[in-house]
Figure 1: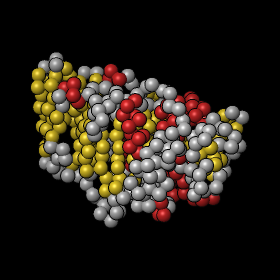
Figure 2: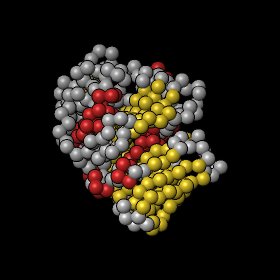
Figure 3: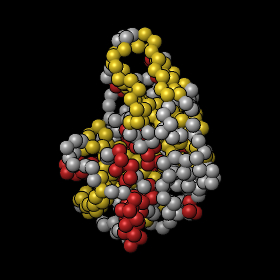
Figure 4: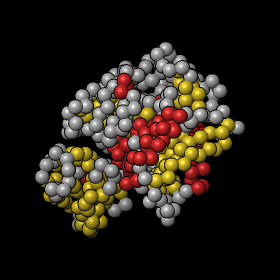
Length: 399
């Protein structure tokens, strides 16, 4: 079977070229006697001298790889943060409930699910074959292979978290965990959920009974799997664009074996926040956050590693305050023994903007103060604290 790249997709491909700088390659591989297609975006800065991360970015039902590349607008983030993006093309799927488009491109969620393959295609195997192929042709860091997706693609990212052990972390936008796929993995997987409360295709609180978990149920599943505290730390983000009819809360759970986080977009539609509004009838497009940037930030701090490398805030009695911060930020923590401490602040594109500490410190209570330069704008940032060989990363809001 061959997925067609339509005239509209080619038009959108031309738009995406204007938004980024790099090579956009239409690729094909054989899998299960079928010719499968994907688009590979390789930033100009890639020269093969070092291993780069790979982000697999999956389109929604009735979309195509080229349109999703424009819709999510991830390529400019890849240019800046230095990772390669693969946009797989789904084959024909059938929606099993009324109200969805007729048979269209998508990814197989399995028997009796919301999106079913008439030919029972093995999309998990296809993604595995894609990883093998890209890794053979490019220098890919095996600890930094990630999956993100929108709608049907986000649902399938949850399946990849369950089935493909090389996936270090996932991000699901406008989607949740399918109820029909048995997630048998016992490993902890970092999961980021980005959902609008006014999505027409998915009820935030109810999901689709018998087919898709609700957003709270999806988060609860991964909180249990990742052994997290059940009470989130909730931060209201600045309403930078008052005309987008939506606001954002950031939810994060602590003491996890693998991170769970959630951007809750109040008033947000079935959209990719900060992306390109190709289909306005899908609801409000939030512009207060850039989903592609936030996904990369989440991935960047969650490589494939043992849980022993993760440092939990409670272990060192960590305090970062005030948060939100204005002119200054304080960090306090305990060192059980002398160790080298590195503390770095990152911007929304995952770039380090200032090293706050990189020195050997004695055992005991430590305090590091940061005075905010005038050049650092308001927004959501992240700090990474490394003590010896262990580290943690946490968000901070600057007003």
